[in-house]
Length: 108
Length: 121
Image 1: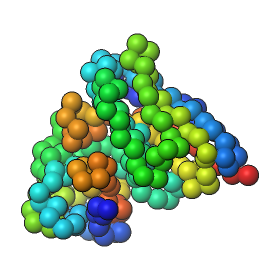
Image 2 (image 1 turned 180 degrees about the vertical axis):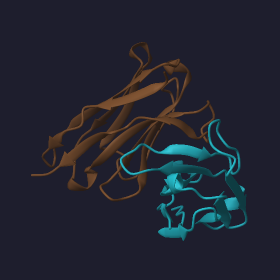
Image 3 (image 1 turned 90 degrees about the horizontal axis):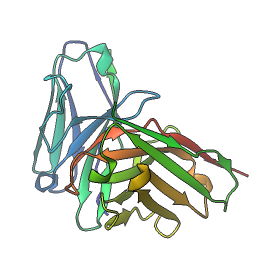
């Protein structure tokens, strides 16, 4: 089955750049979506189709997908960005949606 | 205001059944595919099931296939999840979400706040 691997946690100082990765063999051939989830809240779509940003999402959020790694980049990290981030792909082989295990972003 | 509101979650014994509902408002429900996702306490997101806007295409995760049934009533702007043979590991917050467009691979742009299901003896 298709498994997306994310680091459990990432820490970054305010104003710095956070990079959250999602790894799987040849993930670059698939479209990746990213969701942000703050404690006690529903997930929010922050990046779709690898690098597109929904309206209302700051330009500080960007995405890239190539080879075996998809990356969500948050520039100029703010305290309000502290959340769990999940990557997601559609696996055509199994006809399943698959989530990564999630990365908890801590702003120091 | 575009909104999804889940209901029906409660505590149930192992082997029991439950039907969750998701009420949609603020958009043309019949134009959108929908999906159910759950999150066990302290765990990550798990996709459960997808239903196309017409109801003609349905997919299930292996963990719930044969036990859960997704359905929709476009006249009532509602999505449902019938859950049978419930197990302790089904304990989670259950969210419904809207697929942003009509293509299967489209992301989910609107999520409900979720309803809690607890399976315990």
